[in-house]
Amino acid sequence: MSANPGAVDAAFFDELRRHYSEDQIVELGVFIGINLGFHTFFGSLKFYPLFSPDGRLLTQAESEALYGTAPVPLTPETAK
Image (tube, rainbow, N blue to C red; front, side, top):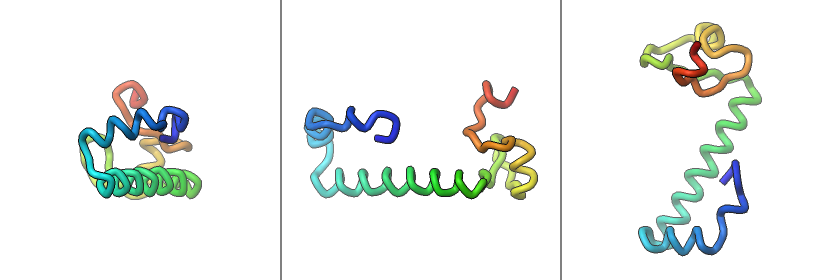
């Protein structure tokens, strides 16, 4: 939805309707939209993830030290 909005077309919704009801599609869309908005908002506040990749709870200072000045998902490739 956010990376390629043009891909969310009639064919996309036709495929969703094969698996979900209209109410479920709306609920899924709202859930995705809210989550995208939260991530954008928290990114603008420099809100860092609460957990390390191994699951430890972190303070914001510890998280900033781990994730860097621009929070990004920490994967094995970005952790190096």
